[in-house]
Image (cartoon, rainbow, N blue to C red):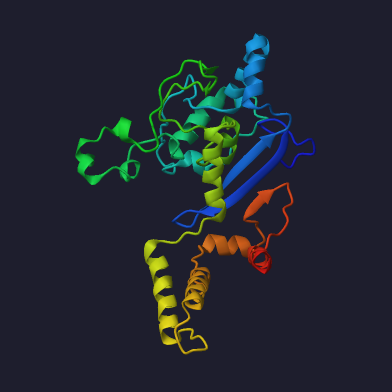
Length: 303
C-alpha cells in the first residue's frame, strides 16, 4: 500500500481503511478493507464475462492467484523436528525470496504456516455457542458449526448460474487467505473478495461494528448503570415546584451512564503501549471531517 505506484499483491489500490482491534487476551490485529483502482461492479463483471471468455479466464486466474481456500499442492503435514519450538514456522522469519529454491519450498512453507497459525479449522465449543442447549446433544459438528465450516470441495474457481463467485477449494477447513501475505506475516490471516449486494452490506456492517466497538461485558455495563442510578438517587433533579423533573432525570441518567462507561473503559497493555509509541489505531489514505454529534442535535433543537 505504501509503494509509490500503489501496486501490491491484490493490484493497484485506490482506497484502504483499517481498524486495529484488541482481542480478549489483549493482542492487536487489524480489520482492513481495500478498494482496487478501476474495479468493476459485479453487474459489469457479469456482462463482460458473458461476451468475453478470454477476459473471464484472466479474471478467474487473478482470483486464484490472490485468494486461496485450499491446502498447497504437493505438500505433507508439518513435521516438528526434535529440539524445535512447538510452533516453529510462525516463530521463524520468512524465507528470502532471492533464494534460488524459494519457489520450490514455497508451498510446503505455506502449509507449515497454515497448520501452525490456526488457519486449518477444528471444531471447538466456540463453534456451537449459539446452539440451544437442548439441541447440543443432537448436534452435527459439520452442519451446526456457526462458521459454516467445512466448505464444500470445489474443483476450480467459477461463477455459478446466479453469477456468484465460487472459489476453488480442496480442503473445506482451510481459512481463506492470500498466500504471499500469509507466508510473509506468518500469522493467522483471513482474506476474501467482496462484491456488492447483501454479502458486501453484511461485511460493511461487520466492519463498522469493529470500528466503534467497545469491549464491555454485561457486568461492566450494569455496574455503570448502578453507579448512575445511585448518583441520581442521592441528588435528583428538582423543578421549580419542588417536584422530580422526569425529563432532566432521564437526560442526566443517560449522560452519567455514558460517562461511567467511557471513564471505566478497559484498555489492554498492548493498546496503551501502541498509543504511547505513536502507532495509530486506524490506517487509511483518506481524510474525514470531524463530526460533532451533540452540536448537530443542538442545531436541530434550535430550529
